[in-house]
Amino acid sequence: MKITQLETFYVKPRWVFLKVDTDADIAGWGEPVVEGWSHTTAAAVEEMGRYLIGKDPRRIEHHWQTLYRSAFYRGGPVLTSALSGIEQALWDIKGKALGVPVYELLGGATRDRIRMYGHVHGETWGDYAESGRTNLERGFTAVKISPFRAVRFVETPAFVEQVVELFASLREAAGQAMDIGVDCHGRLSPAMAIRLAEALAPYAPMFLEEPCLPENVDAMVTVARSTSIPIATGERLFTKWGFREVLEKQAAAILQPDVSHAGGIYECRKIAAMAEVYYAALAPHCPLGPIALAACIQLDACIPNFLCQEHVTLGEGYLAEPFELKDGYVPVPTAPGLGIEVDEEAVREKRYDGNWENPRLQHEDGSHADW
Image (cartoon, rainbow, N blue to C red; front, top):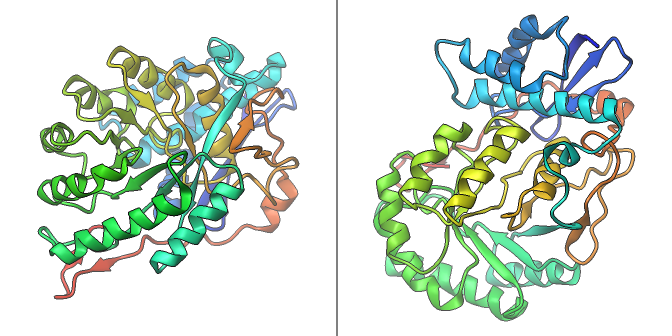
């Protein structure tokens, strides 16, 4: 079996899909994208394709090592995301060729269903409470909120009170049986993260996600040691090497590698094994499309330290059979490869120019704020 073609598709709202064709009439799908850098990532896929054309797609680890290590400048979001999407597609091909789901090739299933978590949105406290109730009615046992935008290095007591009041209203609406994570999006300074964690602790958040930026692991350690709330991070970390220091210094209790950014399915399986040594859980990051979600679910199915799965779509309009949510869970798929059938005709119809950009936030004084 030989790889014959790699084709990328820009798909709204901000996704890039990849189809890898072979001479055995088996195609695999992946999702290689850096949000806001779609064209750049697709170009990296094309450049990696020069090596892959004519190669056996089943030698996944060999190709991963070659593409990662043959570059003098390794890693980073663009190169690793391009490699991640390619890797997903190769696993899809191999699973289809053997007639088994990917997780069967990685040790087999450790669970029967995958716990999903929803997102709570709103402009007011009432909106958040109503969104929380809606998620509860849909069967979710866990949700996540991102309750603020631009944040100064040191914020006012009113800022903290507003966030706490919002979280408290959601907790009251959802009750104690709902896990509620807080996504800080790296927008807080360590000092503000500590102050906010102290105020939120009585309401028992499931985790604080990226309470500060992950570049300075020691700063994250300071935050983690200041609170009983589990710290989560990982969406901006790449490969097993990016997670090493976080684990060794116990800067986080929950790792959130993104299967479309961190190196692909098998690389995230290795990260999960590293986390297991430190009694850390995985809650894979996935604000992307249905192919990325399918790759995450294959990972979730076979690791012992899985917590819950982020998602923004179940594949409606892109998959022949979207994932089915029941009581807040998705059954472990049994179809071969990634367990999905991409509706290629729909994908081709919904292509766009790929020109999505990250929001740019500003403080009141006009200075730039972290998004």
